[in-house]
Image (tube, rainbow, N blue to C red; front, side):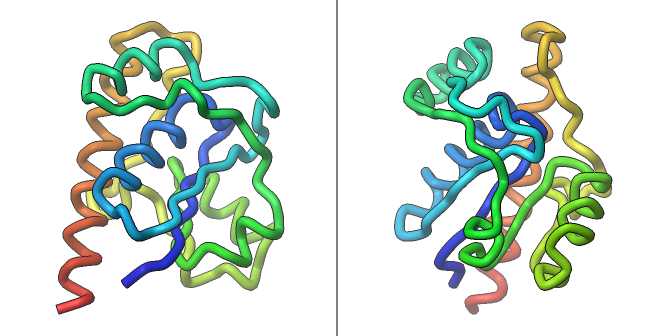
Length: 146
């Protein structure tokens, strides 16, 4: 079973905090972290993301954005990016991570598009894509352990 998972998006205030929270709820013994490729360091999660997660009874109000760094990449056994471009960039900057970096939407062949500053409908769409990706990864992890 995985001990540590890292979820990466652009600013670490919308997509990755939501994915992190969903994974952490389903994997209580696993360290699930998130970071941003170009994080809005020190900023909390977007209010719409907080609201949508609260509707799922998950509190991400204490989330603080952090930049992706070498420690994250070395400690994570699985790194999930939101887009193929992010995956390529991570593998370029951290070549040792090849083989453990995938898109969250890898199984569906989709990028989870950035909802930042695009309103609640865009956040709902991104969260639906995140929930689908999380479900597929959880299923894949269960199959690997059995």
